[in-house]
Length: 205
Image (cartoon, rainbow, N blue to C red):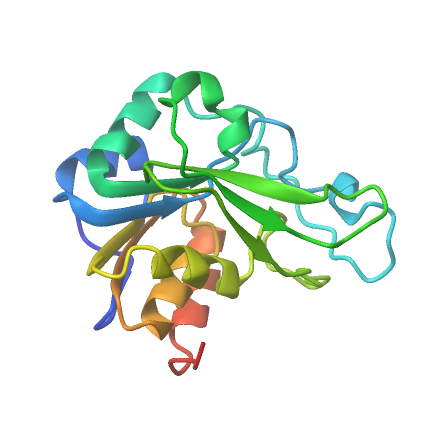
């Protein structure tokens, strides 16, 4: 399949990860944030009534979570796997001790944090940062620093894959760390935003 975008570090494929993942070689790390199936894809619900928060187009991609076959593909795609929103998929993933917790410090009616399932058989670890992302380009966009922190636990990972790329936060973090990364995204609108982010100079993390 022809890439949607490619540079020295990052490759983007526009399409369904269920069709593209089987055609790719196994990577060192899969780091991703799939749809949780809770309707957080856009619309007024994402602003939480707070002024300044972007109201994103409701594209409907969070109506359903990925099925068991999709998670089987994800788990077989990398030597190490990190899946944000792991609490929404606990019935589809094997037991593990190596969870990540993002402490968000947002207050109000926002969640105190988010959980990531990992295939690491290691201690649970916590990352603390208030996102303060009122002008995010994706309704569920995570901080680049969070994804870079995740990569830091897998220092030998030379090739990373994000099969639910969104606007390319994992790829941006990987490029800043000078790691190669493959992103797959079904929404072309998000692919184009990711391309623009990746065309910026490499940032110091």
